[in-house]
Length: 430
Image 1 (cartoon, helix red, strand yellow):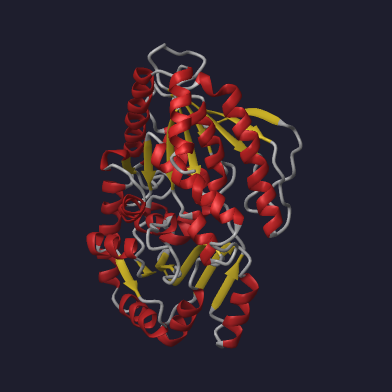
Image 2 (cartoon, one colour):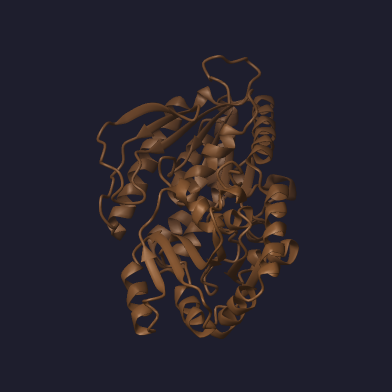
């Protein structure tokens, strides 16, 4: 992406508002960093995000109201927000998300006219507030939904459907999604959900998944094949660890299970492994630097992708799932709808019910058949190369944003246009 200070009058200009951004390591953080890095040179973009705080405890607090920097060539403005330094309480989550949303809204209101369109990435849904500011100022609005954050918040017990916060955020979602210029959904399953839930034309929805860094996640990084099973990622409420640990115990295979990650459930997993009598074969470690993950996964026999299937995660195509395929390591994954669809298409692993016997059978099948594992690995590499290359996804995003910019310029952004969009967005839902 080229320097935004050198700009032609016809170049589309874009402001991206994201709660997460590198050096944070969560999946949502690197999504727009990669998309913008791989976008066409004529696209001028700036990212607005808070000071980094996730994973909690890895970053020192910063108190400046705002700061500017460049990350891999992308200009970034960081705004102040509350930054937890230990495991986040519900109040700390609210402060972290809410303060940033308010300041980002003010930023859009003050600086929004410099841009043809504004992209807001959810979750969390609080970023929809600066999205409404984009509507007020007559900018094009693109909503990128990579996480059904509000539905998940209910499922995981963080809020209830009757609460004031839930009703307000659901209203914001409806207004933003029905009045935005484009909705970017992570997977076909997610796109179908929003098409059925809201009044959205097919032409308004674009499916753009996560990509994979093929320089970092290269099968050639494997130092040696080891008969181990691996999990890397968050140790959180969305992962179905219990049936997978019980399944590992029942599989009775000659392999250790190695877990690398961070999250509130580490002590629970250690206790469960001890109760099952497999703590000598299950090693639970903290997170490792992202650049070390490929070598660990590529050298492993099987990768685990355990997801809760009784929650609203059927849309999920997790980055660890894609990165496992890119590295040529077959997986045993929970049979959520999107993973089942990819498994049927790619044939790169096994999707199973979250039931210990099913997990055990899958682990035995793969552990005892190295040729099958190699064939699955080759198919996984080919699938990711076909569907999840960041350079191709960046081109698609560039085309989408250029189209929105042209539409906004044609529609105009005068007072009448702004008032019309605001009335349509708000009045329609009152």
